[in-house]
Length: 214
Image (cartoon, rainbow, N blue to C red; front, side):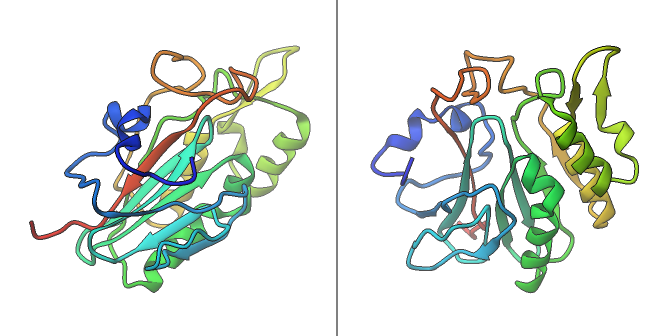
């Protein structure tokens, strides 16, 4: 999805099931980055240009920032007192490389304090099977990686991305966060899943904007 134009946002499953709480006006500006599974987090361009990044922050009124996902983790973050918000795309590479800490740093540079976060629908641990090279990356980054890695005898490992991000949030001093329980892979009636559908699937969008006085 290159842009949210006309009423196309109404057809996105990520909006129907309530990952977008509060009021949304289709006339408001929406900016989505060109995601590259990296760690770059930027302040949204007021002209709506789409940089290569995996997170966008903004304090601009009547503006939404968003990300698209189909198994990776969508995160929406807010600092209510300063009206700073951010949307983050976190695949496993982004998690181990630090896209979440980079987002927190970017938000704080905009004056954010007292951050809160929502971790949205993504592939759950039961279905996120990984190779030993991914396990090694998580062991390198997380001192308590055993809590994130599930492995049955004789089977490949599974990684809990939501728990990994919760660990990073707590390490940054953020204790106000909600983690939605949904697994994109396990629920084909509600969510797109890149892995389940072998890459032939759509995308969901998560959007957030600063609260207005209206």
